[in-house]
Length: 289
Image (cartoon, rainbow, N blue to C red; front, side, top):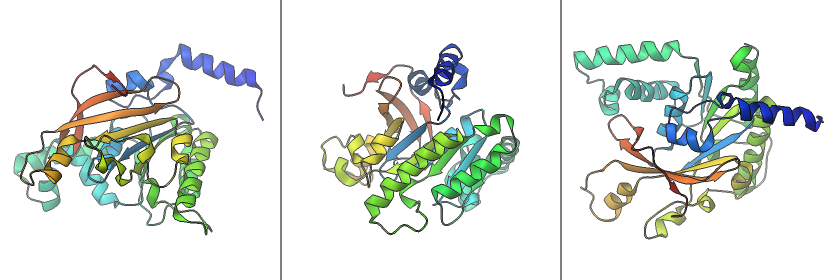
C-alpha cells in the first residue's frame, strides 16, 4: 500500500522531466510513446520473419541505459553476431559464414569493441520463467544507480514457461503475461517483450496485423502498456505472388496500444543484409487511417 500523493508527485516529476523515459533511438517512436518508462511493459508483436528479434535487439543497442537481453530462442553467440552486423553494417550472412573481407573484419572488430563498452547483459538459459527474469533484474539492481531500473528485453513470450504450472497453453500464456507485468511493476524495470501473432492476418487481403492477433491470449492486450506490431508488406508479396521478387525494404510499426498517449503508424526501412530497421520519415499517420 502506498499513499496516492506520493504517486501523484512521481507523475508530476515525469511531466516536468521527460528524460525519465529512456529513448529508444527511434525519434518518431519516442515522440509517440515518450520512450521506455519504469514499471511499464511494451509488447512487440509480429509473425515469423517480420523482424521481432531484430527490432528488440536494435532497441537494446540503441537505449543509452543498462540493458538485459533474455532469450529463450537464441544463444549468446547468435545475439552477438546480430549486434555486430547491425553496428558494423557488415552482412549478417557473411558474419555467420565467416567470409568477410579484411576491411569488413576491421569494422566487425570496431563494432565488437563498442558493444563491449556498453552495459548490455545477456541471459540465454534454455528454460526461461518470469521468476528467473525477476531474479536477473534483482541481481542487476544490486549494482545501484541506473541499474535499479534497467531496460529488459525478452525474446519471446510464448517460449517462456511457468514453474509448476499444469494448465493449457493459452492459460499459461495468460499467466506468463500477468507475471511479466507484475515483474515490471515490482522491480521498476522497463520491460520490452516480443510476442508471436496468430495466422489471422494472413487471411486478410492486406495482411495488416491487429492487436487481436496476439497469439495465445487476450490478456496480453490488457497487460501491456504499449503494443507495437511489425509489418513488412513485401514479405507477403514474395510468399503469395512471386518467390523471386525482391524485398523492397518497406516496413511499418503500428502503435496499436499506447496507454498514456496516441496510437499511430510509423514507416521504416528494413535492411535485410544487417537485419535492422531505419526510420524513413518523421511523419506518422493516425492508427486506422
